[in-house]
Image (cartoon, rainbow over all chains, first blue to last red; front, side):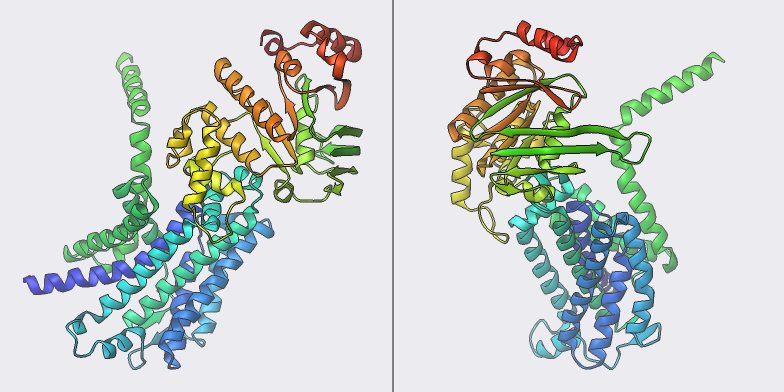
Length: 311
Length: 261
């Protein structure tokens, strides 16, 4: 394989990694900060892709972004409402919304499971026109994605440093303390999940525009992939400041994509992606657990072996 | 002024664990009072706080704070007027967040979209320096790295910074070592008297129950069995309290923790 195609592969990995990094940032908010595992992420990603594709198809590529984010916000709002006001367990609320979104997504796409955007204008084609004749013209895709990711990252971290952001973080950290600071944890959960939902949908919308197509399964497994990326990022940065951790999450998404691309080069079939991501999540969560309890595990093992020795 | 009028509370109603905690219970606390509360386990001391804070709802009766009926107000709304500290130093702070972030959330400074400004930091430093624990130089340190005493001091500051109408202390020094407990108790006394905060303090330490505050309540089985203040209180000793307990409840005050401390 020559250098040229290697660079191409790296570039695609970078672009796809950055698009999923938006979902990782959404999880950074819901999972790391608010301490809620939002299982509606898959459906919400697909919702963003469907809405983004349909609106772009009707000739409004920029409006597509806004519409996708609004739909994601609504989806997050419903998930949060179910778990805070309707007495439904937070995991179950996510699963329920995810299931409901399947029908909604098909309906949004106009009773089909696949939309093609080959002839339609997208944010990427708009950017290509815009950069025509400049030295950046070949990098228009990366340019769009970078702008969006940097913007979302900066806004998200700045938001987390405001009083509302602090209240969201405190809700995930110690909800008793939040109540005694006269903050309603229901409100912080609703705000946090709504914002996370809109970022997830934005991620889905960009993915649909990038691939010039979307289908009902575009978001399947994205939660696990994003979670794997988030945990890779956490391993990289440790528990440092917010900026470092947020940037680490984006890097995590990129690293995950690189690992996946390499695996594909080693002739791993594409359908193995989900299994790889599942295994990475398991490793990323359980390795720190085993390291933490290594002394105790060693002791237990040595005792077990001693017993066997006596017999 | 805090008034509890004919409060009745039943826990786990309709189950085999149903327990009547309060039956037609009334209590009035005057402004600026610093009341210490003693009583054996299960006497209803913490339940009393839960009722005042709104963690436990009443079956009948009303709770009036500063002339406002708060019987039906949810807990997070009451928290604007009521500060509370628990025995567990971890319960009052968000451990992964820094001291300044914790203080900022509790302070009521700034609006919902504002960050921590330099003026806020200066204010927090000034407030922290009154604690005399050297915390004013550690604004950016996560609270989980602080000792139990330091955490409880920060929580105390958080609870009193926005000048609450009422401060509830639920054995807030019981989990600390004796020396730190004394420091935190002295600090509490300073803050409460300096700001003239109305305060209720549950304690297992009979001596501090008499040393601090201006009124002492003794509780048993959801009732106040002894209520003392003024001259009578200042002449009381621990032994007197034990005798009073035996007289009024017909039982021995059996708690090694109380006798030894």
